[in-house]
Amino acid sequence: MNNRFLTHFLAFALACFAVLFGLRAGFGRVVVNPLAPAILGVLLGLTLLAYWFTAWYTRRSPDNFLAAYFGGVGVRLLVGIGMVLFYFFRSGLTGNHDLLTFLGAFFLAYFLCAGFEIWAIFSNLRPFSDKPLSESE
Image (cartoon, rainbow, N blue to C red):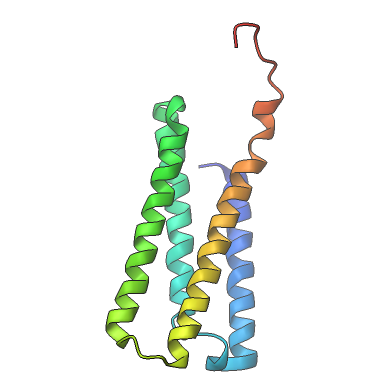
């Protein structure tokens, strides 16, 4: 794996958990769902797994980067939908405050992880843009 990516990922994960636990210490259950650390941990793990899968698949066949990337995104989406459905069926779709804090924590963590993954991809495109195109391309 790329050490630069892992360093940035670790810093991102630590910052996310620090903000999460700071909000939990300051506001408690009013703002932060008790399952928020688990949600964030699962989505961060899926982001790391998707990166590893994309890197592995791209090493095998560099032309299939998009298939590998969207495969990782699809897996994260399916696992996310599964997490939300599991919570809905376990808690019973009642209109309580815990449901709203769960959904808020889930979508915030999901979009933070997706944004980090997009940032990681865009930050690695610069070496490829420096290559001159040949006349046949």
